[in-house]
Image (cartoon, rainbow, N blue to C red; front, side):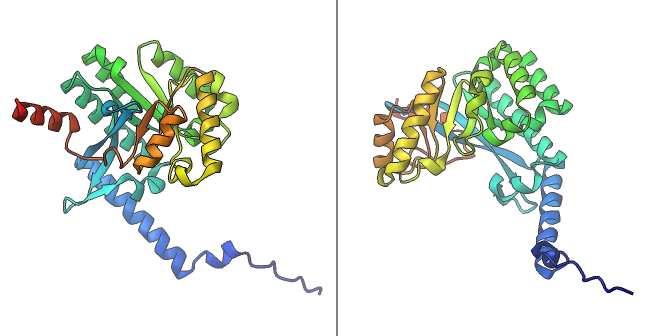
Length: 281
């Protein structure tokens, strides 16, 4: 009887069933369980970060609402700690619903602000998310013109035809769209003329320490030129120093966002500004 050699063991095979793989999978299950419980009990809130006008940095063009989940002790857990684990699951869709619901509520209570809310292209076909959006627009019609929906470049590329149709429908109702992480994948360029995003947010990997990175300066200038060609406003993400901010203004970026101008805060910044104005008066 001929003896057949066993197939070579791949690194993935070696990892499967290993203590490390088991620990990673257990952590993922624990994360999903924690996030699901927080959603069920509505232990969620938005943190707001200002996006300022490049040439008038004391004025917020709009705020980005970033979802925060609280564990059973009340500790706030940033989205970065769980989004990778939930993005492709129904929990990811529920998070998008919760973010949108809270964002629409903030817009309804404060008519002076514009607010961007993150979403996945996967949520476009999720009935509860669409119901949440329609209910918010129906209850307060002027909200549409102050709502910005942010879709990451990688998410938009998953289903470009669906995203394009959805954007056209919503833009007719006044909603703006921002392409998040612009430039990170480079695959979006050929779709820009079909997408018609209103805003492009240049990925932070090109922005951090741009003053010391001549290559990134050239790339950002090219991204700004592309956006301008398609009549899109540009936002530089992850601006952390005054030097970088000044350089980005010189490169023609329209708006700036990052810790240099304000960290995300769960206390609504516009309320803090109103309080300071009242005390000053």
